[in-house]
Length: 221
Image (cartoon, rainbow, N blue to C red; front, side, top):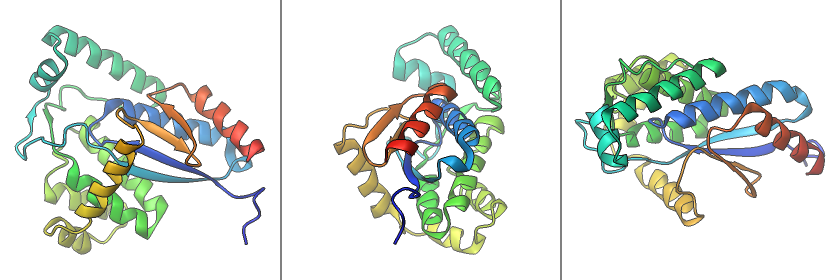
C-alpha cells in the first residue's frame, strides 16, 4: 500500500493540441515541477478538450478562423499572436505564426494521446510535446494520419498500432466520454489544470503560481 505521505499528486492537464495557451501553461507547469523536484512527486495525465470539435478535415485558415470566431480584426489577431509568441519565448517554447497557417481538427490526436496514456505516462507526455511542437513550431497538419503516426513513432510508440487506431474508431467513445465528463464539471476553457481531482488552476499562469500550488499540496495532502 502506498504511504499517503509519499503518494504522488495527480495532475490532470485538460487541454487541446491547437490551444496556444495550453502550450504556455504546460511550459510553466513543467518549469514549476523542475523547481520542486523530487520533493513533490506527481503523476501527470493529459486529458482531451476540443476548442473546435466541428472543425472540418480540411481545416481553416488560421487568421480567418480567429477573426470569425472572436470577432476581431486581422491586425488584432496578429497582435495577439505576437503577444503569445513573446510569452512562449520567455518560457522556452517557439511559436512560428507564419508556419501555423491553418487550424486543424484535433480529435485523432486526442485518440492517440488516450492510447498512449494507457501504455506509459512518460510516452503520453512526450507525444503531447511532439504534437504541440508540430502544430505551433513546425506548422504541421496534426489531423493528418501520416503526421500523427510519425510523431507517435518519434516518441517510441508503435507506429503500426498507431495507424491501426487512426484507421478505425478505436478510443473515440472513450475520448468523447472524457470530454463530456470535463464539460459537465464546468470546464469550458483550457488549459484547466486539476490537482488531485479537487483543485483547479486555469489559463497560462506564471510558473510561480504552479510552484506554490505544488508545494502547498505536497505538504497538505
